[in-house]
Image: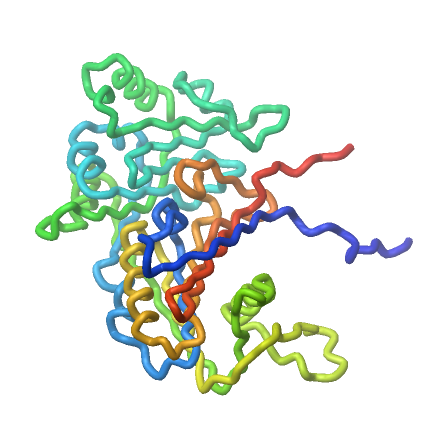
Length: 360
């Protein structure tokens, strides 16, 4: 039997887009504002002697979130809940433990949209209006229901509200384990109020906290990014460095690692790598973005600073209300490279929007 030529297989489709911005003249980019479900945040700082406390603690302080087990979806359309947490401040809620390609999933965005990503059988039982998944080519295996919780017409006594409430209470038997975070509109209000509300409703609620790690690499050559530079090679270097990959490419006959440094490079004394993992709201990421931006503007001597944000692989949406899925991967992430002179490069990475064709 002949060995297959595995090296001739085409890589899975993937979508990348790149944008250049002057971050001193513009607001927080949409790639940050519209990415609602953030799982990890990484920061790479080359040639930095020390890290300011504000930069190190911004995502660690006051960033608790909560896990609610066995949640019934109809609780999310409770009028008291909507008025207290959805219409005031920003509520972010996401199913965990379920796989978006084979399980049901529920989410609430900071814009107040309840999203139900349901298998066809459960959708048909529900009796609500929805759309067939964008990723189904022939046979509809999944449907997506979107409900605007902030709509003035979505209130008890209205026909639409009563219909939705009946459907969710009597026809959707699935219970969900979710994580939730609430950014209150007033500093005098406590973010833990949302946990207290679920606890009052007799649910098991547990406190979750972000995890943080850091490392320093000394005497390291780093690539320099410029308008003429191959951006793909630069971002590849960021990825290899982030996962502690072997950047040594000068060993003869090294079959395992054939990586080559992108040129040009400069040697720096040290490179910091900071990573936070957990559940981060859009508001938290926006605040962190502004702190990084201010830090870079003060440190013109830095060659660049890279911020990477990774979304949840099984999130039902990627950016805004755009449907997301998982086939070969569930990537939805972005990287922002801050450069001297208030220039930045934003790279958006998304698993393919096309369902793989099946040839028989």
